[in-house]
Image (tube, rainbow, N blue to C red; front, top):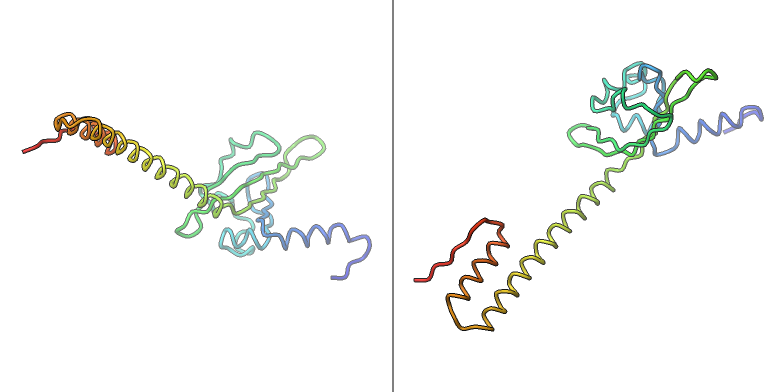
Length: 178
């Protein structure tokens, strides 16, 4: 890439924006797409020629509403559908204003956080499973304690019924012997 000395800064910015894995979208004041980099094109599954001039809400109906633009910099997690699969993005929306403070455009930077979100959900599910197993083990230990401390079958069966009720999360249990 050969550029004149006067064009180094704009060329460097363009190179960074065009090569980053983060999606970068430039919006006008009506949320129409003015420009987007290749990563953003992949995220919305549309080429720039189709997306430019379209409202971001037309491309992504789940897009945040206008009422949520309350500050100059917004950080938000967006879950947007890409085909049939939802994707999670860490979004930063930067509002650009003129010297009078009037909004001129917004820059949206999207970082795909889908894998991180899947891992967080997996860890959460694993935690739930671990808590369930701990409750089961504690109930079994209680039953074993009753069994080893008494030979009264009625007490043992009642204690088993109580502990099973806690494991399977019911309001009442009954163990019958024949």
